[in-house]
Length: 289
Image 1 (cartoon, one colour):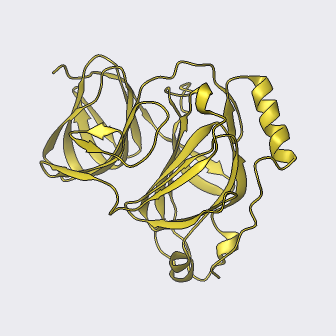
Image 2 (cartoon, one colour):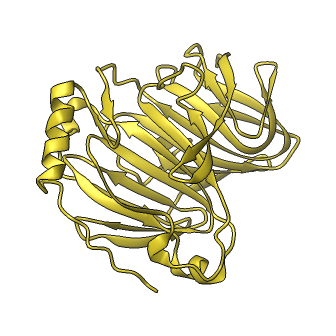
């Protein structure tokens, strides 16, 4: 099985998002997107105790035309949306949402984290949706750590969130072929990960250090692999946490404006208009404190 080579390794940029500092490995350094992946944000900021849930996290905001997905690594994220869902997902879980023709949601820390304070770390990434599915009804799927299939390889635990990996099938529903993995591993581990050659594939390191294709990568680095093999081989040099986002390219025009991702400027303008006249619903938040 041919091993993939590396196209490039880039370091995440530190950005200010609404007063919060976070790491952004995509887009970065002239790489606008890696089809079907549009954006990757790494949030790692503690929550101070004694605050108000209503003043933390991100308040109600709309989306259309893609899937915003959140992998929770520490703490918790409380989701509410305009189609009636409320859920809290903690460490090891995933908030999976397909915005479809429009949804309004909020993302706040869970009440125990708000009261007691503590670490909060998650990855949010945006996955584009093929045009024929962009205007489907939205849906939301909370996936707990227990609901996420896992496999042991060497000294690593691999969680399969979406797609098929070594006979395991992830619970998330995708609109184009994808394999999305979360990996925690000890040092001195060699991993061989089969990935379809046609899938665009990126690897992001939350923390740790590894080697692939003779090159070293460290915490907050993103590796973009060439599509020249059917597997990825990595040598873990330090205890590491990482994610692998791989998916078949959609190959369609992308028109993006803020929280909307469509195929044309006309569709974007329609999305803005639909939001302002209430066609994406409304969210009247309730709080646990």
